[in-house]
Image (cartoon, rainbow, N blue to C red; front, side, top):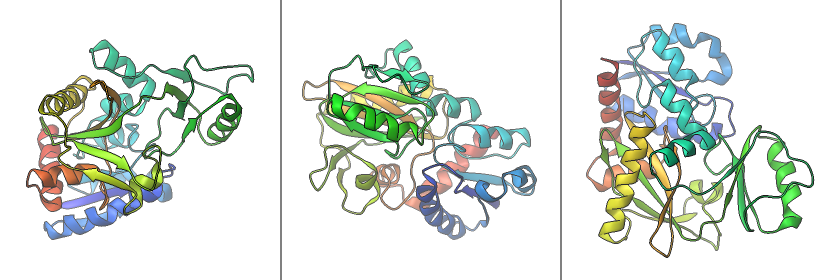
Length: 303
């Protein structure tokens, strides 16, 4: 097939997108496809014309545009099939404050939060005890994220984040370890346990994308009952958000045995250190086979 590989864009996650696109490009060629690279940062206005000239689009964008559903909506408008979720599901999942409302409405455990649509006044204080996390409402890859330990750090964190982000959410610190679980088709993949290396106190951008920045164990060495619960919650979140193809849900597993669903990613990272490809490999699916499977699922969704 003639495949349009869409990557790059103008979000803060541009470099992550481009790095992942390199491996996807090679895999597509190994699978026998011809590939045209398209970067929305350079020529968004040409997307519809390019999509009409291709049999399929493979999207590897992170943040907005890409995970917000805009590109998906444009592709849908000209009947170009693509991998992953449709426009509406993508839009809901990217918006953390909106998706968390869906989680609560469907009995999925998620931390409390406050939504900040604009920078609050200087006398504003969060309703949670310190430490807290303040993060982008629509960002990912742990960019636009700040851990605030006390009131003295609050104003600097707000100034720094609102300089680059238009919306933020505030969450309390949930003690525990990070666990992530991918969904492929209608099945949950083996979860990954994530432990930041080098004394990091949380799984930040450097830990995610620097080789050796974190210890990632797949399958996660969790009790069978917890593994089953993680997979159940990941698949349920995928369904209630109206997603398709694949996704990846991020959790905190607390010492008391409770799980806390943080967010769901509709276009999971596809770099050499990314989590979903590790999960697929754990069940015998190579990277090339994963790409082929995503194309197959995308074509089936289009029919």
